[in-house]
Image (cartoon, rainbow, N blue to C red; front, side, top):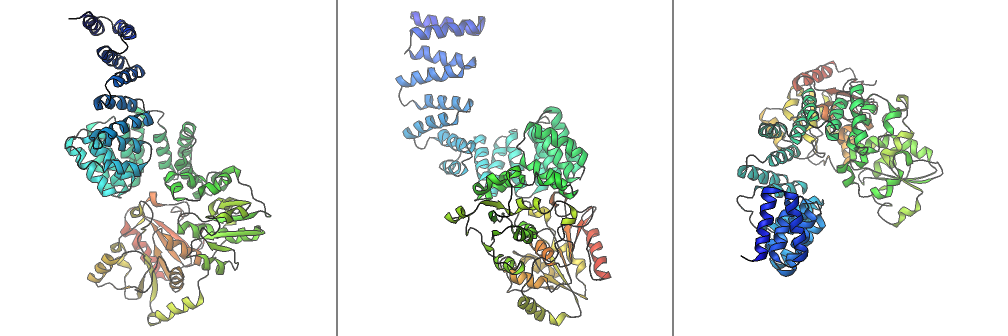
Length: 601
């Protein structure tokens, strides 16, 4: 045995059996003398890694790599160390070295996809994970990563499949359970998600993430008090967990418990002042309570919630006109932009007359389906199609560019400011057209129904089943369809029950807004869940009963406590307290009275 080998053996013995610090000093000293000796550098890398000195580990491996060019195992060790240090770019650089040598290298492709995932580049993450033609049968981590990437790319059933395979390989890997549960939430399968989170909790009852997920699904199921109990268990494990504090605050907001919500709101915001989802929830609570001074300062938080901000392609144009930065002057040449949903565009248009009267020079962009509606209703030719100014150089013509919702605080400062009724006008010729089409049913009460919200995330939380509406079908009523989207299965069900739903097959309820408005104007009453048609009915002054199935589906503009909306005086708002059937019975009693359906408050 050579003298060097004896020294290395002695260092190993010292490190393992006598004194780690002494052994570490000895190998570092020896490496200074044998700067290019692979055995010395290799031992230095091993000992330094055990001592937690990853910089020394990486440097020693790099020195070996200078001697052993293109050693894939060595480069793999280096990039995994960079991953441990969360140095994603450095890890990616070394992965690319491997892929230049072996473009099909399994772990490198997998981990490259993972790095892109961590960098929020979900498109490239999917590209590289899909380059692996077949994941290894025992690589549960790979299945989990592929599931996460698919989830972020909104390929939900594909993601679900990969998470399930990861669990099949390793049924103790709790991350896959939590990820599967989140995927099921996105698919709006709340009961299945609840079961998966409970399975994860059985594996590890002290996992904070699992407790948060359990609380989330309970909250969405309207089991809010139980959700708060679960969140408090998470808080016991992680007392300053901002996400938990925020979720508890949101639960109390849904319960309209202002004092408790304020306590947790202040705690959460102190930790993270940029929790815009919480700020918006707290704002919604203040709006429900008609505390407008406190609420409008937080209202622009809606724009900064991640999922909302991603949809706002023109956000850069308005970012300097948010919150307290926004000041208006009647002499400003002002451009008002629409926001992402047509329902809220209708809601916010309730201040358009005030805006038009205030500004000397104003233009308002609108969904192309609404331009003619707005120009007619407000008798002013200031409305143009979405993007007419904001998506080209014409934008420079304006002093201020502002989202419609951000203008409300200037014109709705107290309850008495909410005076708008019937502020949208349907076309008289279209009203007449549907009046003629319904002329054979003069003796019947004409009741429109809409039972689904099909656009927004968690739309099913706002939706009912056509079966829920069955008691409304009586011989003295004509039930008219106002449900957009695919209702073929609903039609078949009603037909099997000998229930007649009046459907205008030539009417595109989603795109032909003029026709939809004309039909609404011919109704005695409209019964609906929260969707865009509900907003049209409100703005047209149609007597409307709006049903909110869950507290999580109740927005600031629907108040189930007062059974009203200050935004639309003609809408009666009903929450479902005990059962849907009891609520429908309540609706039926209102219909039986048939007293003109005056819901003004």
